[in-house]
Structures are given as C-alpha cells and as structure tokens.
Length: 285
Image (cartoon, rainbow, N blue to C red; front, top):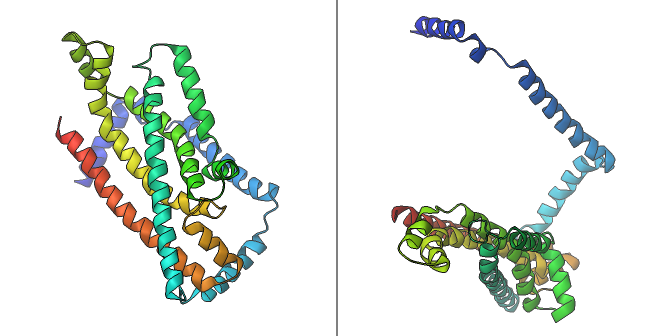
C-alpha cells in the first residue's frame, strides 16, 4: 500500500512538476522573516539593557514572595466583609461601565458602517473619533476621570465606559458591515425605507454578535476594574494596593484568590451565555 502511494505521488510529480516543485524564494523569505524576528527579540532586550542574570535572580526572589504569601489569610472577619463589599463594587463598576459603553457606542457603530452611511466623510470622521478614544488605555482614563469627578467608583465606571466606547464602536461597525445585505433588500423591496431596512434587516442579524461582544468585555473589564482601583477608582484594587504597601503578603494572596475565583466564575457564566446567544442566532436561520 505504501509502495502504491509512493508511486502515485511520483506519478503526480512527474505529471505536474511545477505544482510540486519547492518554492525556493518563498522558503527563503519565510526563513529570513523568522531570522528578523529573532534578531528583533534579542535586539530589544539589548536596547532596553535587560540583564539575563537579573531575570534568573528575580525568579528566585519570586519564590521567596510566594513563600511569604502562604497561607492566604484575611485576618479579622470585619476586614473580610469590607473586602467582599469592595469586590461587589468592582463587579458593579465593570457591569455599569460596559453597559454604558455599549449603549453609547451603538449609534456610532451604525454611523461608521459602510453599508449604512454612504457618506465617506461621515464614516471617516466617526472612525477617527472612535480610534482616538480607544487609543488611550483604561488606566489613563481612570487617572483623567479621578481628576474630574474625584476618587471613587464613579471615576472607575467612567474610565471603563470611555475606553470601551471606542472599542465597541469599531467592533459594532465591523459586525454591521459583515451582515447579509439581502435581508435589507427584502425589506426595501416591500416598500420599507432606509430606516426600516436597518431596523428589520440589519439589527436582528447583528444583535446576537453585539451581545456576545458585550459579554466578553464585561468579563475582561472585571480584571480592568481591579487594576484601576489601585489608582483610586474604587473597588477591590484599593485594598490590594494598601496591603501591598504594608507588605501584608498573606492578605495580598487572599485578595488575589478572591479576584481569580470571581473572574473564573464570570468567565464560565459569560462563555455559556455567549454560546447560547450565538447558538440561538444560528439556529433561527
């Protein structure tokens, strides 16, 4: 059987020599690309003056920190209750920030879509505006909003809302542009105007995709809400930063475990909801 396979392969090579001949130029280009990437990797380490001796030594130091973190401890019950309240605050920041961002970004997603807005100038201005907003990291937005509205969870909500607004606008516009135009044409052929085409032709197609994206961002923003809490935007991150400052590593490990468990649960629930939403959308066609 193997001999027959080898003979058939040899016959194909003899019949179609050009198709089975090795592309030397393409192979050389691929090897050259890999070499360039490796050179950039080590060149970056050299340019940033990163010492491999310090990296190896730091791994040993990391082991010492892990030892100091064991066993995780929350101390007094009153402190645990305060941490649980702050964890709930972190979830509220992530939820409200994500929901506000999606709500505000929805009309901008339509304005940036090629199959909805024929004006090139309008789409260009909308897309550049969305790019400008999402180019600033959530942590930077948190620092900005803290100076505007003061410390606390409201600044965290505004930071996540502003950062995700630009990302949602871009993702929503791409989902709208990828929608099947036949549904819109069907609505228009029955006498509906352009808004009817968008409402009954586009929205039912893209809504499940948008809902899936919002769920994913809520999961991601739970982690982001923890980070921005370190700079004073409320939530569990504030307590985490305080325990790091006083070198209470057992409390730090307990807080980290709280965040990990919460994110894992949200990840599981969000994944099930995303698949359920997408599954219903595909099953309805």
